Image (cartoon, rainbow, N blue to C red; front, side):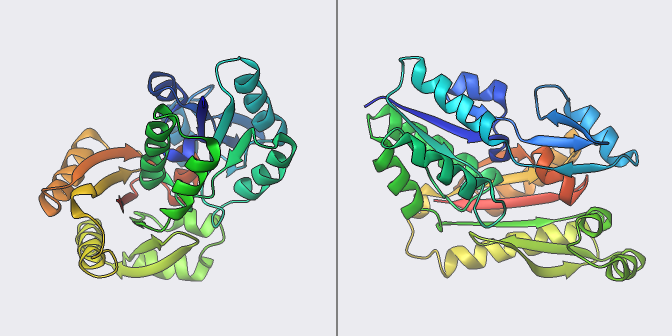
Length: 286
């Protein structure tokens, strides 16, 4: 069985990187002052952050049904693949997954949409695992089942450096944002397979990083204690970080998890729209 793997840029895999990995990647749309841009296609990371911090009106959207189906059709009509497994961002964070599942009904036994309940660095690992299974000759149905069975063997924490963008997105009230800014409070948020929830607060990004690392260590010793620790993968993430900031954060993560596979992945533009620049995150999966 020749099975193609497809995802979106919320996995942290760019369209260009996807080509080198043999993975099909659909870019997430970013709307800037009513004009639609596609991450990695017609807007650079530098241009995105300039718009984000330059007072322009930014919002996110999901790929249109036509864009998704056009990619499915292109893959299937190429003659290189019999099936497609599409891994969008978690259904708990966007309607794009449920929308794709509805579209896939027209592609019986050809397109399989996996609700892997992940995003960013943990979603990236799922996509890479799916590609390994596809290379082994697994069918779309088998890969979808494997991803969904393994979905909750992951955890994500993220801390934002500014409350401005959570306020813009309606996740906190203007009053809470004002008080938090005055007190220099940095919120730590968590994703445990579904929605984004509040986890803790700290007075500096360094304290946030320490809290996130300790939280994951506690989870590994607790709810993940039955997992094979040799399979632990840890992804550090950030939004618009400098090379020095990336190096420092990655160093902290490697020191905290010396025996794990550790890597860094920038947050996608459609995630950074909501976190703002300077956000740092971390995710684990097995």
